[in-house]
Length: 220
Image (cartoon, rainbow, N blue to C red; front, side, top):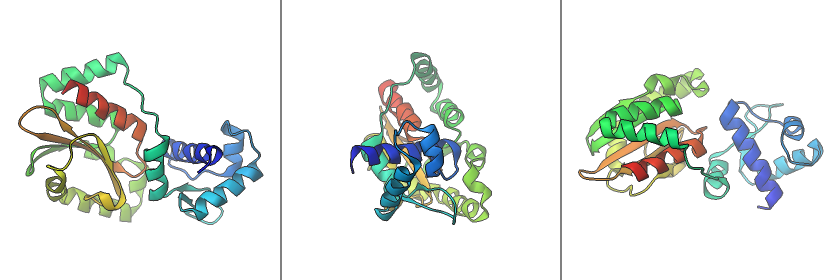
């Protein structure tokens, strides 16, 4: 993928992550620093669609990312920044107090659900209200799908408990929870082993979440 196509894909994904709405060529031409016409953007978007990176959810709608698009974004387009010192200190205080308190802080900061596994079958989770307040779950089928995920958390966490050795995003076929959601997971240092997962829709703020997980690795 050339640099202009990468820049366009990043713009589409960043917009969709922030707004949860399909994005069109006219909007991108007017609001993004792409320096090309809406017609050129339209042609580039058609090319990205043919390659499977984006799709049109409804006739006359803009485009949104596919799983392939998100995976390319994760592999090639992320620029993960360090957390501000004050925020990292907040995480450190919560972690020293109690890992459950840390999970609550992370749920507030991400507006997603956080799962803490003390072993393969001992779980603590928080932030389910946050999770179900995401726009995706206004769709009844999506809500049912995520409810099934919640019911199967123990099995899913057990399947990855001994496999995860660094911060990682699980998407699509690699995600034991469901292809309709996304999971960011990291081990916490020390003994006994503990695993922390942030569960959300595929439309997750990956830059933000991975910045938080990177800080957890440093402080745990």
